[in-house]
Image (spheres, rainbow, N blue to C red):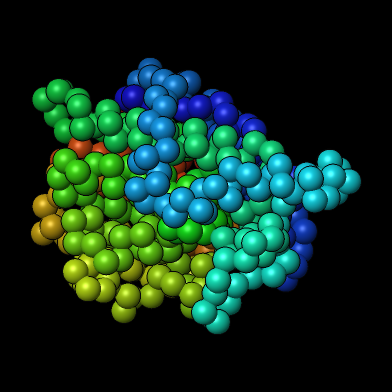
Length: 349
Ligand SMILES: [Zn+2]
């Protein structure tokens, strides 16, 4: 299996994040996640790790606001100039705003901190010196995976794995959120959409709010997310069952919010319904936003999906028989993460 991976993710290593209740904790979306998956992939005889190609900024601008991307690109150097002492301190050197644009009609202010509150949704999307470079490389992994499945000439439906970090599905058109800066799955899906209809299935534990926002008014990209009910879970304000798209996009978005404690059986029931919607839509390509934080014991999740569950989830999705770009999102039970990813991917090799 073609696996697109860049070591540039190591340039994004925030020393902390601010968690629920204002707790300052070590950054959970860390490089160790990738190392665990790399180790597990290297033990297989089918993982073909390849660096991504550089697709430039145009496919990213096709999904994200240009001023937001410019903010990501210059944020760190502006922050260094504004506050060199804090920015250079190893314990402090992650940039976050302390004020957020709320329900008033927001405008983009001219100051760095004002812009940060406008372009960031929460306190997990910390920006450090290498964040922009890592996010670009991650988006290029997703684009490379999409490119591969669109060009492949194998007889069976092709698949590829975009081994992305940072993840992407919480990032919207003009905001960073939930460890995400550029929406890798959306960039890949939008790129594929010029060649045919695309479905994005998001199986991360958290609602794919960014992906929902990006395609909410479109009918050429079906978006489906299965996740912890936002009534109790991040991202809290989006991901409810009655959100189904607007305008031309009405009926082309679906959310499956599930209760705390959902195990294999409950998850697979929702998955079957989602897969049936995808079959009806009859897309040319599938982009699978793949989070493993539905796993029983994940520190950021409240589901109880097992490794056998991942095998069955992968089997049922692969049975769609669609060219599939599998894009890495979350998953924080690091010790189990490598084998969990391999277990899912094995269905597509
Ligand atoms: Zn997640």
